[in-house]
Length: 171
Image 1: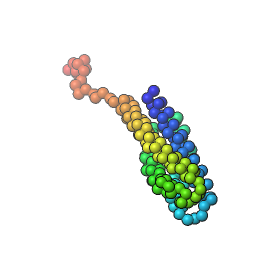
Image 2: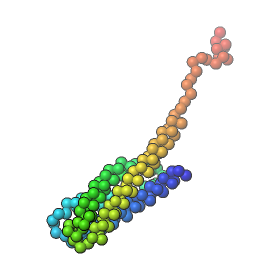
Image 3: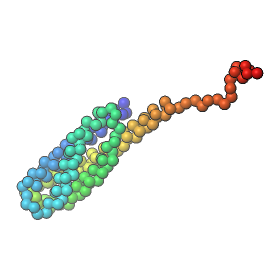
Image 4: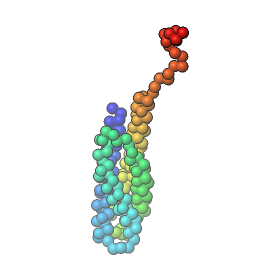
């Protein structure tokens, strides 16, 4: 029951990561297609991270429902969580605190910029939570694999003394 609950939580995290990266990809693609080539390095970074995450989690969403899956994506979650943290920092520096209207792209699109900031944070949060959940799944999978491999491998040591019935027949 515990493993099923963890897998459902992992799926919910995967789904939220997928949705957040899809929204960020869509909004930033809109910004990039409607802007000049000035001052876009942060936006391009955010777009690349969102697109990579979207591609990975398109397939990664179904992994928690595969019986043999043992949380092997936890290192990917950890790496991407730090990349998304950087994306959160970039978007917050660029578009919060009254800088929304003066920094491009999309000078008059403050609502979309704040949407990007919010979903960057959500993707970061769910990736970080998913790192913990998948590490627990990985550890449980590893412990179960180690335990089942040692149960069948345990053998009795042969005795060095011969049974009493065969010792008396060789006189």
